[in-house]
Structure formats: structure tokens, C-alpha cells
Amino acid sequence: MADTTYDLVVIGSGPGGYVAAIRAAQLGMNTACVEKYPALGGTCLNVGCIPSKALLDSSEHYAFLKSDAAAHGIRATVELDLAAMMRRKDAVVRELTRGIEGLFRKNKVARIVGTGRIAGPGVVEVTGEAGKQTLATERILIATGSKPVALPGVAFDGRRIVHSTGALSLPEVPQRLVVVGAGAIGLELGSVWLRLGSEVRVLELLERALPGMDAKSAATLQRALEKQGMSFTFGAAVRGARVEGDRVRVELSAGGATQEEACDVLLVAVGRRPFTEGLGAREAGVRMDERGHVLVDDTYRTSVPGIWAIGDVIPGPMLAHRAEEEGVAAVERMAGLAGHVRYDCIPGVVYTWPELAGVGLSEEQAKERGLAVAVGTFPFLANGRARAMGEREGQVKILADAATDRIVGAHIVGPRASDLIAELAVAMELGASAEDVARSVHAHPTLPEAVKEAALAVGKRAIHI
Image (tube, rainbow, N blue to C red; front, top):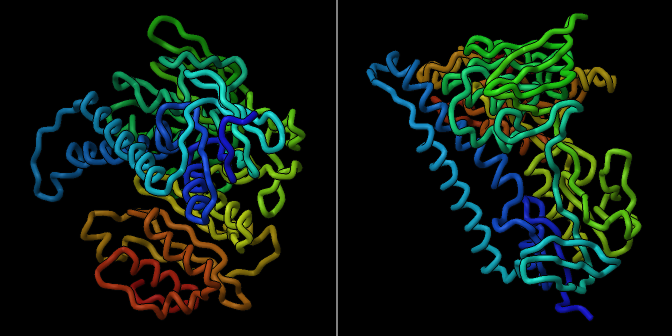
């Protein structure tokens, strides 16, 4: 017999899970959220998005005071207190995870601590410190997220060979850091330690940084990071790594030659994979692909009636904001509403400095689809606010359908690109044209004026360049 009965049990309290639980409760469902860790928020809030951005902001302040403040007439002697920086990062995480606890109480979502396992359709078994309990439920939502991918021959030890979680809590600044993977996670965490004094080398198997993002924009960011001191080796395959005392010996092949690199810390950031171990989904009949993703239809239903899945555990870009929107859409569909997610309007961001943000199609993707586009670009060098800030690198790029002028993609490299991309994501969601953005009044002097100018440039009539 079940200990408790619910309308919906969500397994996982990451951005997708906790948002889905809150929205379900708003819609009148008696909802429970099962989480095995003591803190809510999943990878994103605890060991991902939030702590990494806290360290990125702190390290930006440090780097500015150390290298750039003098240009603003500020003379300062700077000393790094890494322990204090880590305490601040941890405090930010605590505040936000406790905030979710408050939201659960406000919305009457039952929080259940323990490891959830699907024991069958409509049954979730939870194992925690107090033993086992069984939850009966009309619906189950899988939101168990993902975990870092390991490389063959490279064993994590949490000290010298680490994944993203370990790289957020290093006890000292490594003299030399080698990062495997030139994706967003590798470049962001590499940037943190580069600013704090590490020599950082990035190894990437492919021939470019940030595969999947606009190639020219990614190349612009790469050049900016190289100016800061980060080095890149492409076409590099890591064959193994071993710890010898306080050093890591990394075996790699690049350019047809085999070589060995030594470093203080090796960060492996080659991606993430769905986390379904011990979930019981496969045993319950839920279909999965060869990579372990749970397969769903366009309403997030799995192959088993009464079981849904969202976020990193299903195919698609592993982004916290994507999981949130899927959580909302899934429970709204459960309630008979028309929840949906426009996947071509989901932005992606790399929080280095300068930042890189993109939404929709890249030039390469448009070409692959046979779509003729008009491209407008505008450099931050010509933007008054950017110049006043001392930010000269990067540009805004807008792609519009050559036949209709509808915006189909946008890519920004530059200051606060993560904020600026929102305007273009909304424009795409509403089906706006480049002309619509170009005719919208933007305050002066602001960074968003560069967006307006890029929209004007689509029609070859930018004013300030």
C-alpha cells in the first residue's frame, strides 16, 4: 500500500523539476518533488550555472582591478583571497537553494528527500535516511538531469583530475591548468582560473572552439581569449592521464604526433550524459536511445502511459532554461492546456568575457538548409556606451530571411551579450522582422543600440558605421 497519493510526482529538483512542480501546484495538482540531495536546485544551482557565474563575476572584478582599473583612473593594490571568494560563491548557492524551499512551501509542493525509483506505472519508491516509502501517483515526471562524461583512461580523483564540480572548488590557484574540451563549460571555468593567475591550455578534439555555435562569432571569442592568455590546441585527442605527486601527466595526440603534457590540474569538460542510473525507467518499459536519453513525444510523454520526461534526460541541448520551459509545458499539457516550447528561439550563452550569445540559426545552418539570408553586423567598437565602458571587442550579428526579412538567427560577442540576446529571442518568438527591431526606439547611450544598428545593417543602412 502506498504511503501517500499524489496527482504528480516529479523525480529531480533541478531547474526543470522544481519549476514543473511549482507550475503543477499552481494548476491545482497535489504535487511532490523527490530529490536525493539535501539541497534543492539540482546541478544548476548547486554545482553548475550559479556557482560558476558567481566565480566568473568575482574573477572579473579581480582581473579588472588588477589589469584594467588604471585606465579608468583607479590605482589599486590587489590581493587574491581565494577562500573568501569561495565562501561568497557558496553563500550565493545557499541563498538560492533556500529560496526554492520557500517557493515549495508557498505553493504547497511536498518535498521528499531520498532517491526515487519508478517501481511501476503510477508508483515511485523513495529510499532515504528514514527507510523506504512508496508514493502512488497519477503521473510521474522524470527530471533527473545529467552528469559529466568521463574520458577512457582518465579517472577523476576530485583533486588533480576533475570535472566541472571539482573545478568550482579548487583549494588553490593551479599554476598550470589543462582543459579538455572547448565548449562553454571548459571556456568558462578556464576563464575563471586564467583571471586568477593560472596558465590555461585548452585541448579540443575538433578543429574549432564552441562547435554548434556560429563559427565566426566563436572565432572572435577565441581570439579575445587568446589575447587574455588562454592557449588552444585543436585536433587533440587525450589518450590517458595519470597523477604523479602534485602533477598530472596527460597523454595526447595532435598533428599526427604523440606527446605528453604536464599540469597541476586537469579539467575534463567534454560534455554531459543523461542521468538515469537506478531510476527504474528502463525496467518500467520506458524507451531510451543508445546514449541513454529518455525518448518522448512532442508533449513529453514517454512510451509508458502516465510517465513524462524533460530536460537533460531527453534529447536536445542541455540548458537549464530549456528544462524550465519544458517543465512548464509538460505539466500544462497534463492539465489540458496548450503548453509549448519554441526550440528555434532558445538562446545559448557562453559566460566568458567578452560573452557569446546566440539564438536561432547560424550562417552555417542557414546554408545547410538552403535558406538565403541577409546578414547585418555592427561592432561594439562603434557603440558609444561600449566605448565608454572600455569594451571594444565583438559585434552583433543578425540573420534575416532574405525573402521575408523575418529574423531567423542572432549572434552577439561582446559585453553583456547574455542580456542583449533576450531582445532578439523575443523578436524571434513573436515573428518579428529585422525592420521591426530597426524601427524600435532604443535608449541612448546603451549597449542595445548595437542590436538596433545590426538590424539596420540587414537592410544596409546602419547609421554609425
